[in-house]
Length: 291
Image (cartoon, rainbow, N blue to C red; front, side, top):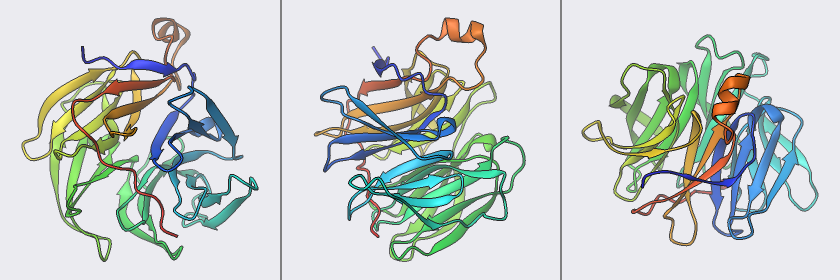
């Protein structure tokens, strides 16, 4: 049965941005509007919460230790030993109503993360790249809701979602320079209530796309645009997914209970939970930030 099961009844307001720390064997994820990131241990089922004092859209492991966060006021480093939160740069200091949303590292250790308006209106979001030397450069502009990112196993393609377009874009990707070119629509979601949100990729090059208001994660073929499989989630607002575990065949799925009515919450008591699905294919590793 293609149904995800609950592993943590977190009741997150806006769970998002998961990543897998293979060295520490921890799943990191964020609760954006509750200004926190989490470290979930799949073996013990424990979940440690770290309050960071501002909205946080994504978290990734750092090769030198700790994690890097994409937050409301830019990029930050967090040190688990000292608890220190160190600002690395804010490219949108002039846009106080914007915040970072989803993000991910490429194989060269760059952290890609995009912005959006906190009221989810307008199109002044930008996809940025935080280089290992801590320089920040804009890559794509004019975005409404910057969201899921994934790379092909040969690092020649990068996939990106701007949610309100309902499209997964595919770009030619140069790993050495970290540049994009020749974008095309790889997957087009049908008109309806759901929007593409976060995303990951498996070793066969198929994309796993979380659907906000869709109650599912879909497995898509970016070469044909075909939906191959649906994993049902007992929460409408499915936000993102990531492969994890020793064999990289466990998918962890974040969800949201943001703006759900009392009646909707009654029908979705597990909304905001962290879910798990055992895939029949291995997935891409979470790359760590190189700086």
